Amino acid sequence: MVSQLADALQRAHDLGLVCRVIKPNNVLVDSAGRAYLAEFGIASRRTGPLALTSPGYSLSYPQYLAPEQVEGKEPTRRVDVYAIGVLIFEILTESILFTGSSVGETLAATLNGRVPSATARNRRLPPGVDGALMRALAKDPKDRHDSIWQLLEELVGTPDEEVASRRPPRSVDVPAAPPPAMTDPVLERIGAALSGEVPAPAVPTNGVVESPQALIPAAHQPSPIPVDSAVSMLHRMGVPRLESHELPILNSYFACLMRHARETAERRWPQVLEAGGLHRYMAQDPPDDGERTATADECSRLADAFETVFGADGPAHLRTLGRTVTEDWLRSTQPKPFRMMGRPESKVADALYVFNHSMDRVRGEPLHAWKQIDKRQFWIVHYANLFTLGRHKPAKACHFWVAAFESALRWGGLANDWTVEETECGCTTGTYCCVFTVERVGG
Image 1 (cartoon, rainbow, N blue to C red):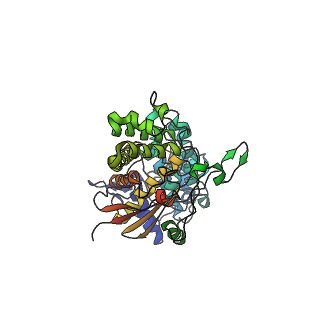
Image 2 (image 1 turned 180 degrees about the vertical axis):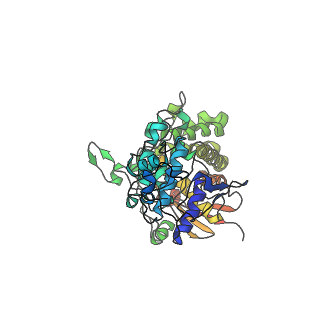
Image 3 (image 1 turned 90 degrees about the vertical axis):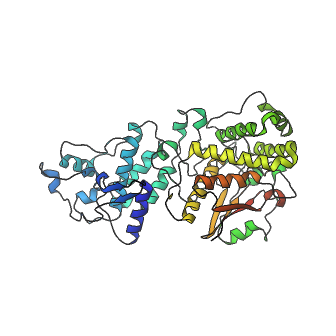
């Protein structure tokens, strides 16, 4: 619902219109789940100081008015940001932002009161939610988000370290660095999938930040990216160049991977562990928590082990693994993308955003980038691909990821409409960077 309101408001704001009257009574939802804004823009009157001093002043839902509206100033689009911020606060906390015995008391709190903490009212919320809502509900409109989408992007970028410690192990997915994280408690209510860039984290080693190459094991040193490669072509088209610091990956993802790998291998699981040098998981499962101790190297060795043990059937087993892991991971950590009712290419963009940034969170640093070429085609780059490090193959070998992208598209409601292909494999080029295309089927 919130995403549909954000879309509607963004279109209105682009046309120079301001709603000014966002409140529950003006949000209508039809039987198909589509949300509409009623009375759009008709509340042009200003409130002014009279409302603060007149006990009999009548105004429904005064808590949705921005401070500048209370002061009688000309409203801008940021009054809509404020009202949406109030709605989200109430959705997440199941409580009213400001309460008073009269309209005047509520409006006085809007002007001078301290914005309450959402996390104090709902302990399941990540601590970062407060910062996003405080900005949306700032007294000065210049301090608020410039758009509803900007607010939603900040909300879903809130890390959830404290919340993770209070969840069952399988539900934990805590980033060690600050890429845009999809925090479960927020997303259960409002959902999100927005594009953006995240900075690469610094990597301390005894107080010294080393270069990325110094942190990569010699066996994993990639070959230079050829100028005639698909990766270089995408760089020339504006896709960002990202470098790996070879950070440990999220334990909860690795535990999910190993759980499904065991189910996929069935009775040959001991052979897979033996072939991959993963003997320590014979006796006990990997930790399923929000820490980062698992390595990308273990994922690569697992992929090699499947190909060694299953031979010609290895690719099929890896595709099964990619499908089941992705389905489980997205189902347990993410909601559906925002624009479920939008254009097909918009839904693909949402699905790719959510999946790639989810994997950035797994890696602890941004290593996934993509570009929309047109309405029918998207290109994706996986830098230091999780299943290619140290692997050298004569043919394309990212069967896991092709199936993973297909699962992400199905999760986004795009089954059978789009195809996924591996265009360039880092196992064959030695760069460990892989390029995939997502292309629309038929007309």
